[in-house]
Amino acid sequence: MRDTNPIQLIGTSGLMVEMKAEIQRVARSDAKVLITGESGVGKEVVARAINDASTRAQAAFVPVNCAGIPETLLESELFGHVKGSFTGAYRDKPGKLEMADNGTIFLDEIGEMTMRMQGLLLRFLETGEIQKVGAERMGRATNVRVIAATNKNLRDLIVLGQFREDLFYRLNVIHLIVPPLRERREDIPPLIEHFVRRYTSGQDGNGNGNGNGGNGGPGNPGNNPSRYIARQLAPEAVMALTAYGWPGNVRELENVIERLIVTGRREVIEVGDLGPELRAPGASLRPRKERRKTIADELYKKLLDERQCFWATVYPLYMNREITRGNVRDLVHKGLEEARGNYKIVLKLFNMDSRDYKRFLNFLRKHDCQLPFKEYRQ
Ligand SMILES: Nc1ncnc2c1ncn2[C@@H]1O[C@H](COP(=O)(O)OP(=O)(O)OP(=O)(O)O)[C@@H](O)[C@H]1O
Ligand SMILES: [Mg+2]
Image 1 (tube, rainbow, N blue to C red):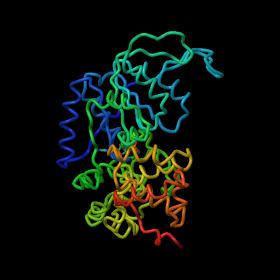
Image 2: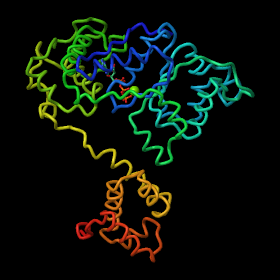
Image 3: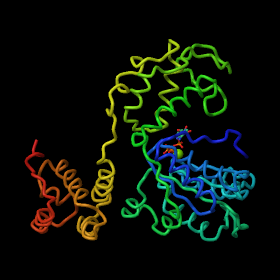
Image 4: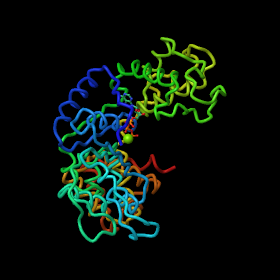
């Protein structure tokens, strides 16, 4: 079960030094940890580092990705199943929670769990007991440390009714935020060095030394450490990469280094080899409005797809300050786009009575959410 590759958390920036100290502190307890941060920042690396620094280091670290697999499969994956509980269940199978006994389970992308799975997880967190799929009774109690991660804002999901508040408080005992790479650029050169060493020494990070997937390596298959021509990056190339925005964070950096090493035709990779997008500093900085947009998108969906009424859905959230004026403005913007600037149609889209026209416009005016319709008339 034990991973043979000890995890290395590269980074010398103030933020990373602080994070490493926090990891050591957190590792001394068994408290649940919630790790948040953008995609590719290293949430799983941090989770592993906590496990490795803890007294559970010799037991299993079991990662489970809660996204992208159907609910029933996830249930059996986490809790296990008994023989005959569904077609194809030929024998009893232990779940990941059982496999993580005395160790750590890492629940990745927890924000993607369905409400029902959230309920099952909550029950487990309350009792520590596992009920396998198809089992009549609860099984024995386990001793598992739970670390969860997400790149979503769970508080937003709670507001939208997609994440259980009680589960959130259970998981959020210790909250670690892994900052995006662009906020700790000092870490970029050591990370580059780390990945260059990895790819020039024939280790691809999966431990199989065979990770170029046919994407242009100089046809020398096998585990030969010197199969690539490129060995290092010129200082100007490192500088250019340090200035880049890295919207995909460390994972994107790792992929770029792999590509450069695998496809490089000279020993030293120069700035000219980087490609136009990597040479334009800040070109890919992530728009700050992104989170705000998601809320408006979700609300819009509720109104249009689920045919909920603006007064029942959006109005109370705004009045209780659970969503902002910006969210309402974004929502109105989307409505006006669809209605080509006609507020009466927006009224209909948002499932309000035609007699509410004045009330709606008064509300928007009063809260500075009325957008000029003319811009949408095209
Ligand atoms: N500080 C670091 N030192 C060394 N490698 C790192 C570091 N941070 C991230 N990585 C590497 O970057 C890749 C992405 O990291 P990880 O999978 O932990 O990110 P994540 O935040 O879980 O991403 P996602 O949200 O997409 O699941 C991995 O290959 C990991 O090994
Ligand atoms: Mg992850």
